[in-house]
Figure (cartoon, rainbow over the protein chains, first blue to last red):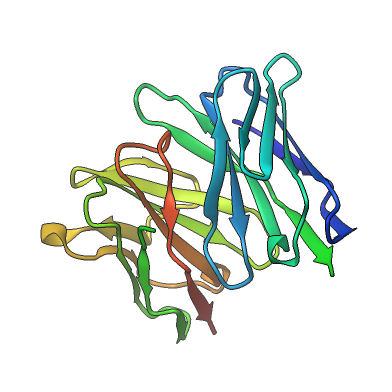
Length: 113
Length: 114
C-alpha cells in the first residue's frame, strides 16, 4: 500500500518568504503527484501536478519531482497571508485502469503579515 | 471554476440511525469519489464510482456503507446503521475522466454521530 509522508507538519513564515514543503512516497511506479490546498472548513483545491522527473512552474508555484529518491517538493515564492492553509500531497497510482489516490497528512502553513 | 455541492453541510444523528449524504458533482464529470477526514487527520479514500458501479473501495467502506447515483441525480453515500466512529467530515469529489485528472472537491459534510 502506498505511503505518503509530508514534512514539516507545520510551518510559520513571514510574508514574502519562500516556502518549501516536502513529500515522500513509497511506490516508484506512482503515476503522478498532485498538491492540494485546503482552507479551514473547505474541501481541497488542486494547485499543481507533476508526472515527469524534474520541475514544473506555474505562477508563484514550482514543484520538483525526483522519482529515484521518491521525493517531491512544492515551493511557493513571495508567500502571502492568503497562502495560509493546509497543503496536501496526493500520489496517484495506476491500477489496471482504476487509479488510486493516497493523500499525505498535510503541512499546515501560516504566513505572518 | 467548476463546483461540487454537498448537502447538508452539517448533520447530527443518533447512533444506529440511517444517514444519507448528498453530492451534486460537476455536470459533465464521470468519476465520483467519497473521502473521509477525521478532524486533524489524513484524508482517507472510501470509494470511487463510475458508470453506475463501484470501481474500488477501501477497508473503511464497511458493509453499512452504500453509494449510488440514480438517474444522474445526486451521488449519495448512505450509512445504515451509523456508529460512533463514523463521525467525521465526508468529502465528495468528481473528475471528468479518472483520478489522473483534476479532482474537484466539495466543502464536505460534517457528520456527528451521538
